Image (cartoon, rainbow over all chains, first blue to last red; front, side, top):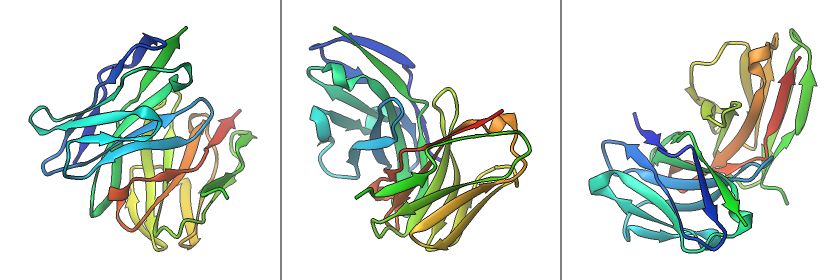
Length: 113
Length: 113
């Protein structure tokens, strides 16, 4: 079964600094990969997804992620973080013909003024 | 228009009570899910329904019973509530296959006292 690891429980960055959140997955075939963001007291919002094709995918709110098969990674990046980006970020892996999406444990992002 | 709506948003109840959480989606999706998010933000799938048919039933106490009267609704009924059931419960939906990502409701925070 597929699984996801987010090695960083909590990350703090300064506003305006660049951001990279790590995600590693375990899956036998080509996975479907997702990043979600959860603001305090809110549900999860889809930031971006990767199915196939270009390994660098663009998402909403200025986020992007790169799929690296050799490293089994799908790291999320943003060149300049805004205070409103402070939230919990979840990486998830799924399969096309399977409705069983697995989430990582999440990374909490704190943004310093 | 809210795509996936859950009611109630907050639910405080005593141990031993029976309660229900309702979920409705207006996206025309075929598949709906219930996830439980614990105090450490870990998301675990509980159930998945595709066109009113149960397709995923993780190891969940049988006090939890999902009911899907039609493909736009997936309700969660919980009998004999216990302290450990306190969590945030998220409903989500997706097209027939999960590879397109999920749309989440805003969650129901259940507190058992």
